[in-house]
Structures are given as structure tokens and as C-alpha cells.
Length: 126
Image 1 (tube, rainbow, N blue to C red):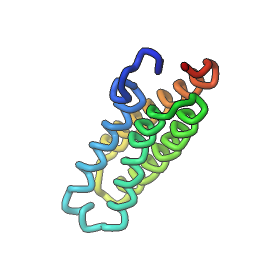
Image 2 (tube, rainbow, N blue to C red; image 1 turned 120 degrees about the vertical axis):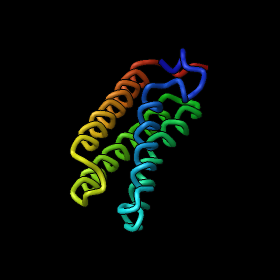
Image 3 (cartoon, helix red, strand yellow; image 1 turned 90 degrees about the horizontal axis):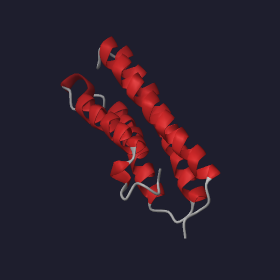
Image 4 (tube, rainbow, N blue to C red; image 1 turned 135 degrees about the vertical axis):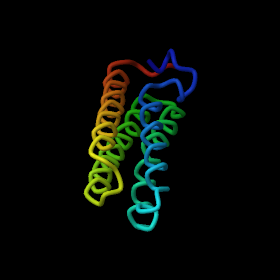
């Protein structure tokens, strides 16, 4: 996987996480949500952390290091899901939007987990 990717933006894990991040940015710009400063800050921070950690991990020299950053990204994706559940409960997003975002977050998590497994099963490239 990583041997074939020349840039982190080619990774499915990053692309899915980035799509979720863009959704969160759109949601937090909505007038009702935008007034909830604490929610917006937490949600944007969590959503930014996923793709950022994938990108940073991609730049690391060892598979072990990259896997550690992917695990942090997985945790951030789960935090983002929790905050989106809160967004639905607060009326900031619809049931359908939450369902779509949940599927997206789960796909991003699965892509990260698959990449972690790959990294743990393969030697570092030197």
C-alpha cells in the first residue's frame, strides 16, 4: 500500500478522512451550529486530526511510527463520530446526514485499520 503511494493524498484512509473533515467544516458553518462555539471548536479539531495524523504518519521513516499516527487518526475519527451524534441531537444535522457521516467515518476507520495491519506485517523500506 504505502510502497505504491507516492503521496499521502493517494491513500484511501486520508481521502475518506478528508471528506469527513470537509463535511464537518460545512456543518459548523451553518448558523445554528456556528453559534455553539465550544461544539464547533471541538468538532473541527477532531475532524482535522484524522487526516492530519495520516499525513504526518506518512512522512515518518518507520512503519511502526506510521502505524502509531494511524491509531491516533482512528481515535480522532471516533471522536468526530461522537460529536456528529451530538450535532444530530442538537438539531445541527439531519438523521440522513448523520447516517452518511457515520458510514464515511467507519470506512475511514477501516481503511486506517487495514493500513495498520499492512504496516505491522511488512518490513520498513530502506
